[in-house]
Amino acid sequence: MNKAYQAKCSMLCCAFGAAVFMLGFKASFGNETELQNPNLVVIFTDDQVHNAIGYDNPEVHTPHLDALAAEGVIFERAFVATPICAASRASVMTGLFPQQHGVIALNQKQFQSQYWDDKEKAPRTLPRLLSEAGYHTAAYGKSHLGKPEHFGFDEGFQTGPHNDVDTFGRMEKFLAERAVSDKPFFLWLAPNQPHVPLLPDQKWLDLYDAKALTLPPNFRISPLAKSLNNQGVPGQHFYRDSRYVRNAGNVPAGPPRDREVMQRFVQAYYAVVSHLDHQIGTFVEQMKAAGLWENTVLIFLSDNGYHLGSHGLGNKITMHEESVRVPMFATGPVVARGKRSQSLVSSLDLYPSLLSLAGAEIPDWSMGRCLTPVFRDPDSTVRQTVFSECVGVGGKPAEGHRMAYDGRHKLILTGTDELYLFDRENDPDELKNVIDQAEYAGIRKRLESELANWMRTIRDRPFPGSSQ
Image 1: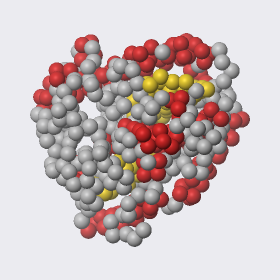
Image 2 (image 1 turned 90 degrees about the vertical axis):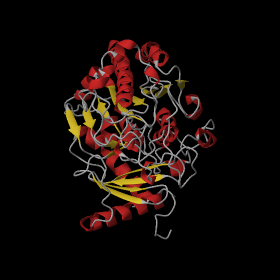
Image 3 (image 1 turned 135 degrees about the horizontal axis):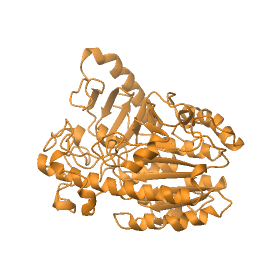
């Protein structure tokens, strides 16, 4: 696999979709409507693990999100390009992995040096390309990359209080303005929640009985001192947020945490998710009242997952499922209704998919795959393997963890070049490393080859033992 081939696959994947959306034909995929430059809304939450949503976990109260997801396609195997905030956002905005765009960990200054301000010379971000396609572009909520107008949005408001009340409070006015405009819009709505601090009002906490909450089977009080679990620079055994206690009941966000403390943390985390669910429900009602809903495609996902005591960890950064997998669904015109897809999805897929929906050309640098075929047919696939990378806070380019996952077998290369292989069908909690077992030799060889080729493509460090 090389960059040119990746780009060709992405462009071919979207070619039919782009033509369809530009023609504005009548869909027959469950959500039937005339498509004429659909409005595009992405709700991009912060630190939401894949099972912190009701349709995947009955312990979590998210009735509005569940109802939205039921109207479209749920992507059950969605992964992020990198499980850390600033780098993840930069990847979605550029269509590239961190080793390519240079935003490592939380280094937003690298993004600002490349993608800010000069619209003639700066590389084309997603909002710039959508603006060129005739869209009014807006970003509200957490940016982590600086003022949205600097990297291509027509308007925006970044961050705000951790409870997102200010952000969602601006939506009614924004939607009223878009309702009387002739231009379609792209709205990047990025709540701070459920990122710490976890300080929900009591009514949201009261939805949950902490003592009754289930902890994951791979829960530990503290993590094992393995490179697999390291959340800092290579060679450390560093586990983040142990001293962070600005949460309900002053519970710490990192290890060590016994079962009772962990359940109280999970209670606060789920309560924040429920508050966010209520805010999103209100936002959707505002869209409907403004007459904008019927011609809008909405995609929901998070910037990364989050460890709720799995493997003894808090935060994210590792290549464990809890860190790198996120909840995701799409709903709207030409999206099938009431379906679940097993297609492997990357957060990088937003870049070509949104451009396709807008009828815009997809740049050849895009590392994502267009999802419009999966929107129409959730049983279809756009890739056989999904990749991710992450450099820990304080790390440098070419450091950190890497992952290649084929939907069953996950190969992880740690920051100190140790290899782990997990058979997730037989070991969904990723507790047994089978890298040296003879029956997995062929799978190991294939995934090592794929990971090495991908690392070469993104200009990463050489795969151990390979020449580059």
